[in-house]
Image (cartoon, rainbow, N blue to C red):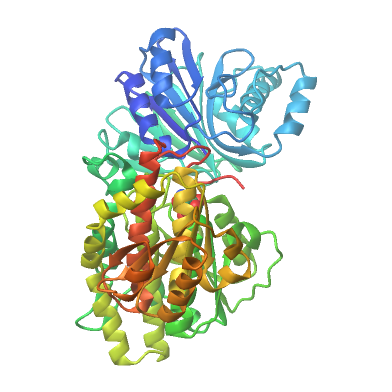
Length: 621
Ligand code: AGP
């Protein structure tokens, strides 16, 4: 996955593209590049490293003037991150130039053919194959038809030979008044200004210029012309498509750091409001009502489900795991939680009576998308829980509910997790009410408690300086263990994932009782063990597990319920969170673990928002 940006209009393209790339760096940041057209020639600069490295290089390497250009920030798939493999890529003639987000799966066979036809390749990328395929098609068609075939036509013919995923932008230096874009499986938005057009992987690069956008659908391409505007066609059959222009609801402040040092910290602190935004308009505690159109409109189908299968990856999978406890406990519906990447290749048993819930912050994760397609092909009803409005997964599912968390830019998911749990809790409560598996008083109590959660998260955030002090003590640990039981077992997994991905410290999450079946052998005085030991649920059992760690000299950092007096005497450190009902504890216990990872990563001088080797949305298998 990568970020792509383009501009064609009256302004200087360079600053728009550069700033746009900075906003899209969350999508990939191992190399960056830009190609501009200044009225006479293409000027291209690219480099291994971040957009800031590109900025420094481009300033000395090229004249950055020009009113048309394309830019790219990369997360390497084919070919190591180096200058040569960075995008944009030229065709052999030097006339065409391309940026690409996605993977061309049949690039090797296409490359073989092109090599036979005399093409040469500088890079190891699939993208260089694609631009030369386009060039080859163009040259052949020119000969066949005895006229100069348009770039759009050549792109279309070439894409019909391609297997894989792409969002591309291409231009031709001999036709410098248009950019051709196309999409399959990777996102592509076109911003429409006054005689100017913006291209980007999401709308953030053009928010200050226009709020009007077209999101291309899969298998669509657009010819964006300075003079003639936009023409959208189906790649397969050339049919013209009526553009659907959306009015964007997000604003610039939402995608800026707002005074915080990192997006991750900002997003951790946004959770009280994000959770409120998630249930706003859906939860009416006083009246005892939960309104969710995606559920209301499909109630029979969902209520009659034999089981729910949750598919997701990473943090979203952890939210799914929390939901297993909630659905089974409250609504008495059997739930299976599957890694989308395993599910899609496992030949799973799926029936028309199954409801599949696909959870994804980005709505673009390739494995989750493939799992959805598989489930649909077997007749299951698929419900999406996504954050990014209009994302592929939100469009591919039969129905769904947005989390409304606002843009999450830090690569480490924080508010996405808590808002996913919030949505899933609302669904479980609604189904429980409909099925009669929850008493009226329990139902009302859950709704009231849910409404109190934003303030309780605010309170949990107040432990920040205490958590920072604990982070300082354990920042040099080589390994950490995270333990929890029941609803808080997935929180232990999530806590360990947060630490791993941003601090690069090895961490394992385990169900607390499983510790004695193996991991206990790891415990010595060097091993910090983070234990979630809130008062509800299996509190006494967890306290016994804490004793077991203590007697083996492990260092214990316990997340406890406010006012807990017992664990305080056994643990090395305690971090308090407000009391709530058991099913909602994950919304609170996860907060200190997020802050802890954040502070450790900052102390270790890690790149918190853009940890190494990662990207925000994983649009490759
Ligand atoms: C977690 O911090 C990561 N960003 C990652 O595990 C993420 O949750 C996973 O890639 C799934 O992404 P999605 O929610 O956008 O589908």
